[in-house]
Image 1 (tube, helix red, strand yellow):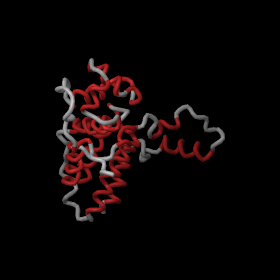
Image 2 (spheres, helix red, strand yellow):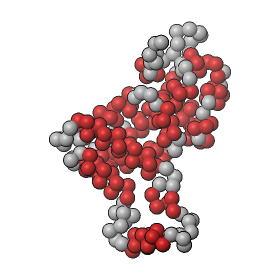
Image 3 (spheres, rainbow, N blue to C red):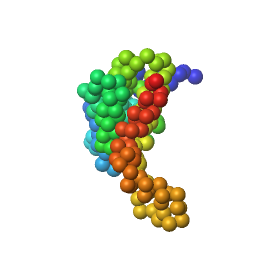
Image 4 (cartoon, helix red, strand yellow):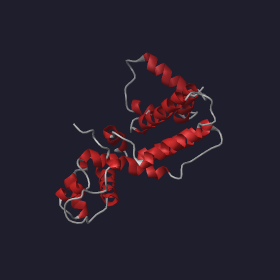
Length: 214
């Protein structure tokens, strides 16, 4: 069986059929707009074709499956990170990049689900990875540690991008049966050095990155 070829390595369209009426970029833009408005479940070949005013079958001249489309969508929104934010200190650079990445995920809540379908890296994702490696190049740690740190950075961002990330997960809960949680939450609310006061997101990024990149 022939090895599956990534959508990013395939031609923009098939060689058969009539001349294309839409570019791959237009198809992806329409799909992203649908996902932003109504979630990833709203993105089907039929729905994207309808938005473009064409037949669903015509999209298969550009893509072989919905998963192809999800991969293209995921890579396309990474372009929003450009120009990549930077800072002189490697850890500071990762923090500002993580904040930009978090904002991107919040603009596109469907992205955390879509990236689970990814089987390869597109040009924008590769550029992001390359930038991260450049930002931490001055650090003397092994290359494997740097790769792990970059992967973990995205993992932390996707965790915080969830609607109930952080303290919000406890909103509206009755703590009466849980005395240890009551004590911890009370202490956190009055402690000026508590994670909430010091920005839990940045604190997490710095702690994890410092540990991996020592």
